[in-house]
Length: 113
Image 1 (cartoon, helix red, strand yellow):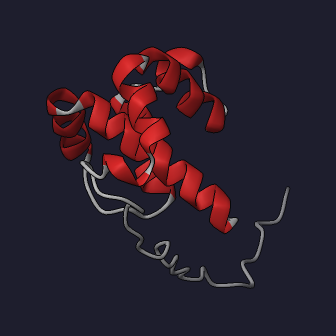
Image 2 (cartoon, rainbow, N blue to C red; image 1 turned 30 degrees about the vertical axis):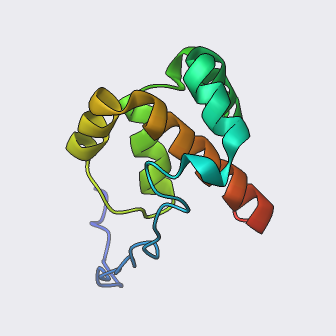
């Protein structure tokens, strides 16, 4: 007969602190803070999407997606929801993609990307 194991430790409660809240480095329509990104987003939207995807180590086809924006926003603790991301990309696709690229560039310059 096998003896029953004896429990010698009680389960512990682990509290996970949410990541520190952050905000977008630039506004949605703050195109003049980086005219190069704005021009690329306006005239070569797909190319800018591929740049964003490459920055985030994802497939080129994912750069302009709601998922990409949501993953980035969640990673850096930027408030919002998937619904907000969807509406932003639906109504202002170029502005949303440019905002994401500007944010990546700024965080990279600050050493936090």
